[in-house]
Image (cartoon, rainbow, N blue to C red; front, side, top):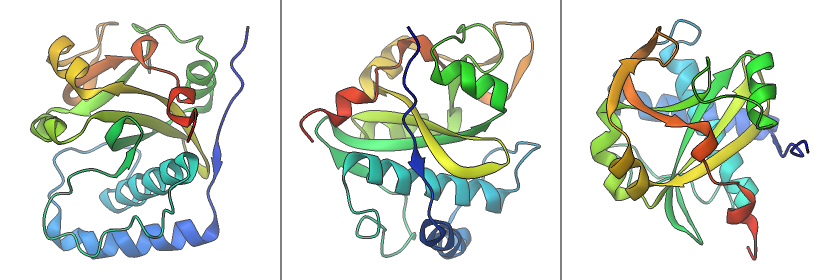
Length: 192
């Protein structure tokens, strides 16, 4: 049985606000890693769009959820019935994203795992859950929730690695979370 895809449409207002927030945060953020397909600025915009879309999905007013300033590291991207959440958004090529959303991807194949950068591990104890989502690479019109997982489970069951199961390397050392272990986003939406 195929999974019905859920997504959040990204509005022009969200796009403009993400650019504004990225500029506001830029003097206060230290980028820890690089990826070839996105500049630091574009990654920041993608991250804000993921946060806004997650709020929209969970029935939270994304505009009211925006921080006043970025002088310190946040203590979460929001709060839902499972507690304080942090959002991890990535961009994934269409073919791989389609397999992920339809739960057809194998954990050990390319794009089969969701990454949490090693430099962010110390922040995980601030959050109750991590929500993973994605955009189709080079198309930022729709944000797709992939799933979520308890941070306690992540910290107890994953170790930092740079090596991929297929023998390649990740772009940075990270906790490589198996997509098959993610809980369905519907669990966060029930009785919202």
